Image (cartoon, rainbow, N blue to C red; front, top):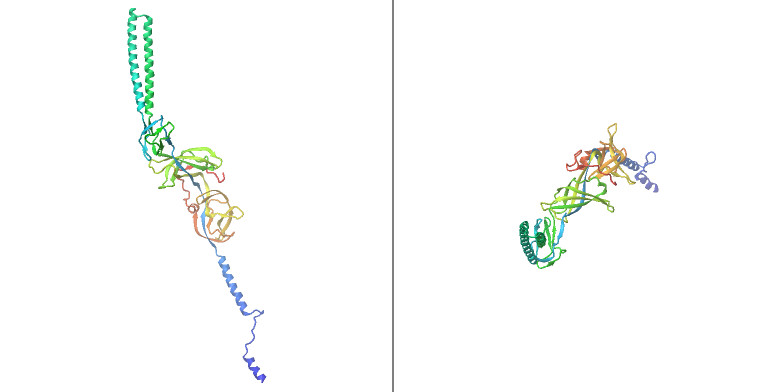
Length: 409
């Protein structure tokens, strides 16, 4: 009975699992084969050249726009005071009025001074009449003396009286002239062309010679004082062309020239003063407005220039770039090169050592390159186009060819 039951189980039961040669199960073999296929695809993908953009290192004149910032001020700014003390009779101007040099701003009461002048003029007339009479008597004495009718002493006395009366006339004329000048000084006049900023007195007020009456500022020409870094001292010269860009209003550049370089450097700020006079005949500017002066500088000799995007900072310090060189078999490879930098402006850097004109440097895709790694150039440009400037372009005609200083100078 037992045998009859076990026999069918032996027939219907699943056969024991068979093993491959070496004892590995079949599923393990399939798993290893799959991973080998994945790794092979990854290695094939890694072997593909890295896409990069390059730029060619140029040798050209270094151009740099130096911005200097300052505040527009008036070269002539005064609080006009009277030349004599007195009572304000009338005020001819108010804030905002434009005046010319010599225009009357304030009139002081001149009644008493006018009467004094009239008295002096009458005294002059009286003295002139006395002088005329003394001269007549002297001539008469000369005639009588020739006939012996007048003594020598009388003749000399009459001549002396003429001299006394002449001196009196001269003195009174001088006093009258001084009084006329004193009378004219009762008018406060504009010392220069300008705009009235404030009227400081009203009719009826008494003013002394030290009392400000009108605040006057010249606006026809304004002055921009800007501080320049010390490395540009000796490079910015009087007469250089400059563009002044106001920080308010239309902000359209205004052509001007450097007028004065003040060589007394600020020891604390390590800067010096650059003074520019700006024509404001159009009235676009006002004193107190901030403005920027743009100076175009350029070297006389060409220098090596590369795009700033080609720079790769080394964690331990220093700077390098990746060059693209072609192997004998035509494969392009990335070459690591240490470089020494000079000046930097806009999107360009000056290369002092490490590169040569015509070298191709990587400007895109250089973040994870390895030495001798195969690359494929996607876009090749010149350093000028990469930096936003035409290669070999001459500087603006208004610029002056100068030897620019190196950083840290």
